[in-house]
Image (cartoon, rainbow, N blue to C red; front, side, top):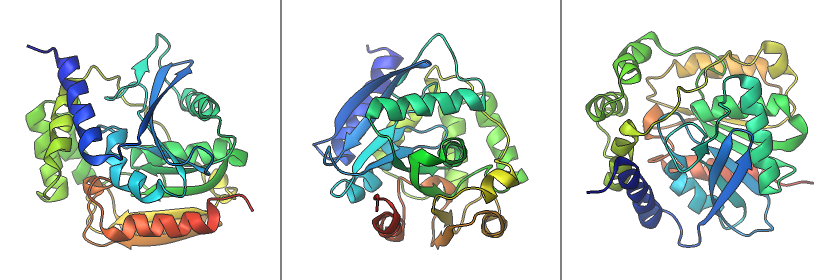
Length: 287
């Protein structure tokens, strides 16, 4: 019988085989916090786009976006160190926002990417937004997909529903929370098997921290595409949109019809990747 680790890796590889382009290349990058695994797609000399997944998932969730962007861009989908995925945490843990920024610096350095477009979902969007403030010269354009803890806090109901899963992340609790937030949306079974295996993955406690400060956001010069899930239960998308519009100098906002927080980015409406493509065509390349 295979160990949990072997079963997890087999489930991970099954998602890559079923949903990702055959040309996907694995990249391993050494950082001060361990080895970061990246799934890369697209022409090696094309402008780079870095994808950051949300908490509790892996880089494999970006399969549709990688396919959509992979003809015109070099797409790098990153497994966050310390979470379920193929990245291997080192002895030095990511404990602070500063650590997270150093880790992302090292990832971009390892990819040989001096300037990138950053695209993050949920917690990944929180990291991406902080990074754009930390290293503005390295971020051409920023895509935030239903970002959490960036412009407003979480819904109280969402946090209460998530609490049992966060305290003890069993398969049953993770599935129950996912079904509640997505309203029992039909999700890819191959990916769901990986999601279930991640419940037993020896992941570190996710880094949490403050929202970016108002002055940081007002000083952000990178163009931002803010994509909000119409039926998100994570937060009030109207408040998120209003706060972002008041704080960001260059923001374009769209609501993704029918989407919930956790159907993204795995099962988005067609509008999502089409909007990202159009936005990057305008802003994702050096002039």
